[in-house]
Length: 342
Ligand SMILES: *Cc1c(COP(=O)(O)O)cnc(C)c1O
Image (cartoon, rainbow, N blue to C red; front, side, top):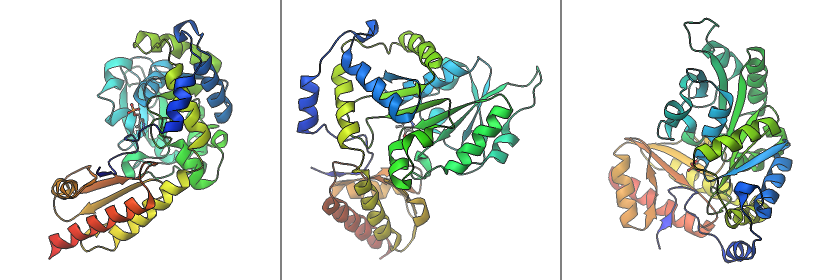
């Protein structure tokens, strides 16, 4: 078995999680009658301090519902650089919600002043800026935590200009564990929050969109329209409930492992790795040669990492890789980097 550090989505459900899934009480969720889905939605809404939650098949659907539910066609959505909702969702924002994106700041995180600079003045011939989306943690910049003080200031500036605020919190669990700030406090500035159960929490499938009762009811209709109304979805919700209970606190281990991996790689010649960026479970670094070639050579030796650009490489820690395995993977990648130099 290779040591798979491509993503925290590659985890397999544990025996205990499979047992919880097998035992789940089920009903038809399109009728609102699946008790396990209802329990998950209640628990997630409570955890994030919002009125209601909606279980959806993926984080992509959750983000797209947030766009569909809070914008009109022709609107503009302000995002940070390489936001998942604009870059990694197959152009759905344009195709489904009919919105276009404007980027604020550089590097993925931004502040209230940068948001204000991106908001278009109100005029009939300009797009209407109606939503801002922040991503915490920010995936494409290496799992950086979006500082809460910036999210708060962004939300304040957004409200002053009549914008809604969406928080793509696919890895909000990681942000909470890394900062010690509670989930509800991190979610408070946002109107809608998307969270994923299938990343670091290790559930096989599923995300949730969380917000006001009114927004969630609108999004329930939109979810059906997108084909995301599922029937005995409690099988999936049971995995998510198990993950919420058992796999949140242990994210500190993933963060510790990522730091160890990063420190080993940062010490190699020809590597550009900003240790300050390694705040959670993602390690992003630049190599002198081809990222793709490095990943292929690592794969041949049993370590899977991803090329994110011509020189950019990503490794992600998760609950299916032990400290020992992360250590082995780091040594192998370090050896390969030294070989390139020799
Ligand atoms: C993974 C991810 C999503 C959702 O991805 P799906 O694969 O559709 O579940 C959304 N936002 C971010 C930041 C992500 O990393």
